[in-house]
Length: 69
Ligand SMILES: [Zn+2]
Image (cartoon, rainbow, N blue to C red; front, side, top):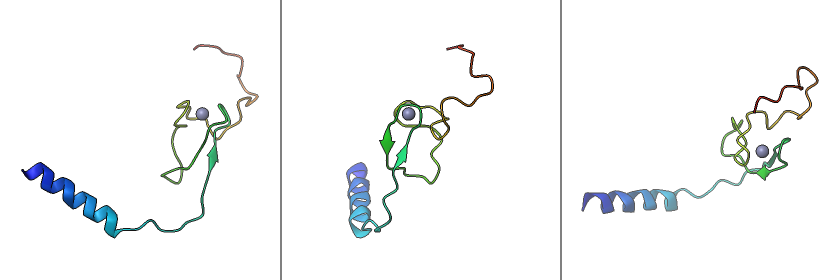
């Protein structure tokens, strides 16, 4: 089957490419305190609470009194 062959190829590629040793970067969501290791340099949303403002403090000062959710 073609599909199984493709699967094997992908598996081989992963084995041929060992993970480079990098600094372990851990991001902390300022909304839900979730900690995770990002795959991208700047993740768009927190993977736990999906907030796009994970890197911004919850109380920004301007117009924080608006509960529309
Ligand atoms: Zn979060």
